[in-house]
Each structure stands twice: as structure tokens, then as C-alpha cells.
Image 1 (cartoon, chains in turn green, cyan):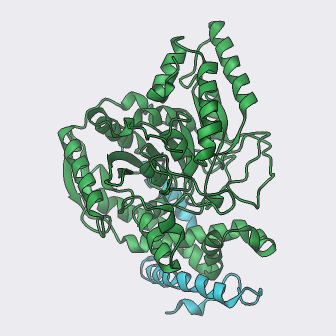
Image 2 (image 1 turned 135 degrees about the horizontal axis):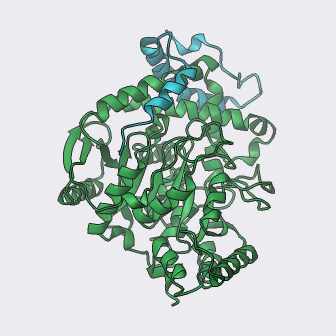
Image 3 (image 1 turned 30 degrees about the vertical axis):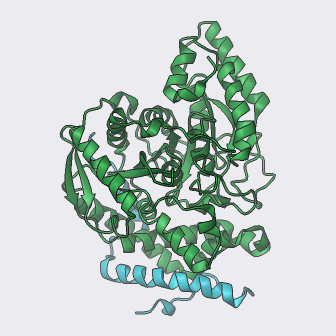
Length: 471
Length: 65
């Protein structure tokens, strides 16, 4: 067996468990792709070849001795460069942290190690997770595997590229305003932003500690479910992490949507939609209806207020984290990232406290209004088809800002609310780039989101389509 | 009400930052400042504060799936 590109995460894990091939065979195959193609698409910051092969060999030997295999036994993965690995450099796409070697491993990665992953390296990301396009002035922009002239989405850019191009079979990302959902949508893979606090932030470089959420990017909802089963264990050493044990997300996938109500918001999310994206969303609703779900209309509270709250909290917290470096090493930041951080200095302490104090009330209102007649909301991930790299980096600053603002129109407010959301592949645009829809759930409703996405993927094959790599 | 009635967290001009950069930061921030200031004025009550976060966490429990 050498064409592992035809398999997904669950398929690889099952093949290794049944002895069809060894963990070392798959790791070698993945490493070769990551080292050659991964670099061409700018998907990767660093590769731990020797450590990965030693780990794969150890897993094969354990299996030979008859020891039990974990659910991720022998699956090659790599993760966004916010997740620390002991002894490995972790710079979060920045110059500021270049050369910083982690002294411990992120809690979520330790849990994936326990389940049997083979961690190959650290993936490309936007500088300090502060660009939704995959732009990185210091290390170059990520290239979309469907067409390298287009943006791949960010900030978990390497995760989207590496899973879509079949370099690895799963990846963890972080999401402060869309950073898992956007690259998943633009690269044609499935990406789940878990509820705030569902996954521990221990050992992760923060962007905004009140908004940062984490989650898996993989080919399918089933793959994401298996990853989340292990990555979302409670961490008693992390004061913010939930103490509630995760559901068995994979066991909940039954393909049945009878009795579930999918709400389509009448306002805001469908404003200013590209025609192609609108058609894609409508087609996905038809499929979900055919799966047994009821499609109902829904109202959502004022998203303009929620977006302002989200932006204020994010920029003040980023300014808090970066103040000493912004003052001492301002030229080590890109202009785009500095502008986003510097906004934080223009808010008063009272305003920031107000923004956080409003959070309880705004969430309660959102739950009672938006979810009064439905179980999940169905909205776009981005309201436009994927733009080119040139459209987001060249031309007038106003046009670029407008394009970037449109990209996060449907994602950024969700982080203030802390809600879980999933990006599901649902079509290919005329320019040959993937399109997707987003489902948003009540807090800790990851199981419902994954169930709906999985039912959709049993009826469609958008998530199975792989790009023809041109570089 | 005006967001200018509060002093900024850091006086960017006093720290020697170029006026153009200060203007960009303030222009973007002023829109959010006014929206959040109005919302806080209209909606915050004495029981609503950052530490009511625990209540938020309770709400987060959601219904059984």
C-alpha cells in the first residue's frame, strides 16, 4: 500500500491497527510529502523527521508485542505553531518569538500522543494568529493547494493546506475570530472551533485569552470527532478549561437528522453574499433537508454590537500581551499585525471591563433569540469566494481592508459568544476553489454539529475531493 | 456621552508614535468605543460585571444532546 492519499484519518488508523501497513510506512510517506510539497506550499515551519520516525517505530514495536493500539495509533499529524512541543522551537509565526524553545508540551498534544499520533512537525500560521488570509510577512504567505495564487485562509493556514493536500491526516488549530473555520473552508476540509474552554489552552501561545478557542482540522466530520474525543479532555491544571468530560463524539455519528431544526438567520449573515456562495448554501440546505432535518428561519441579535465587542476585547488583550515588544521591537512586527494590536491602546480600561461585563447578558440574549426555534444556525463561513493573494495584499489599503473585513464577516463575532462552530465543505466555485457552510451551535453542542456535518458528508463527496497539486 | 471623556489606556502620542499610526488606531477604535459605550450605558446593571462570568459558564452548559 503506498497511496495513502486516498485515505482519511480514520482510514489510516484502521489500516495500521489491522496490520495492513505499519506506522513507520505511513510516517515515511507523510514526511516525504511534507518535506517536498509542504515547503512548496509554505505549509510547514519545521519538521522533526528523526523524532517522528523513532516514534512510529516505537508504535510498530508495541503493536508487534500485542499491546493495545490507541484510536490514533500511527496517524501522522502536525499542528499549528501555537502548540508547544517540549524541546522544539515555537514562534507562532513571529520574529519576536523566533528561537524560543518550548520547555513542555501543550496539554492537547499530550492527549493526542496518548491516543497514538505521530507528530511530524509544526505548521505555518499567520504572525501571532492575527491574519485571516494566511499572510505572513516574515515567512511568506501560505499557498492554497487548489491554486497557489489564491489565499489559503488563516490564521491556521498550514493546518488547512497540509490536511487538504494530504501531507498529514489531522491537525489542531486555534480560532480567535475564524482562524480554524476560514482555512478549512478555503482549502476544502472540515474544521471545528470548539466551545471556549472545551479544549485546554495550556501550552498554547495566546492571541486573546478571552476569545481563543481550539479545535481539529481534518478531511471529514468523523475524523474531527475522533480528534476532539482526545484533544478535549478536561485539564485540572488549567483554571479556565471546563471540568466536564467530553462526549463520545464519534459514537454519536448515526447519519440521522430527524427531529433536528436547522435555523437560517434572516439578517446579517446573508447580507452581501456572492451569488455562487448563496447557491452553494441553498444546495447544502436541500441536502440537509433530504437527510431529515427541518429548515426554519431564525432571528439573530445585533451582530454589529457583537463584532465591536469582539474586536475591542481581542485588540486590548493582544495589546496587553505585546506591549513590551511593540515598544521595544516595533519593526519586528508586520504593518498589518501592528495595526491590529495598536488599536488596543486606544481603549480605556473602563471600556474593556464593560465589554467583558456585557458578555453574560449578550450570550443569554443570543441563546434565547437565535436558538429559540432551532438547534443550530446555518450560515456562510465567508460571504465571498476565496480571493487571490494579490487581492488581499496589493492595491489601495482601503480595498484590502474591505476585503479582509468581508472575509471575517460571519466568523469573528462567534468568538465573543464562545459558541462552537464547524466549517463543512459544500462545493467548488467556478474559479476552482472550495466553498463551505458554517453551523453554529449552543455552548458545548459539538456533538450535534459533528452529527449534522457527518450526515451531510454521507450524502456528498465534497470533503473527499483532493486538489491536483500544481507546484 | 462621548468616548473621549475617558483617558486612553496608553497615550500613543506621548510615547512618541508617529501621528499617522495614532490616527489609524484611534479611527478604528472610536467606532467600537462608541458602540460599546452605548451598549454598556443602556444594558449594564449592578449585577453585571466581569465576574458574573461564572453565570456565563452555567449558561454554557446547554441542553443535553
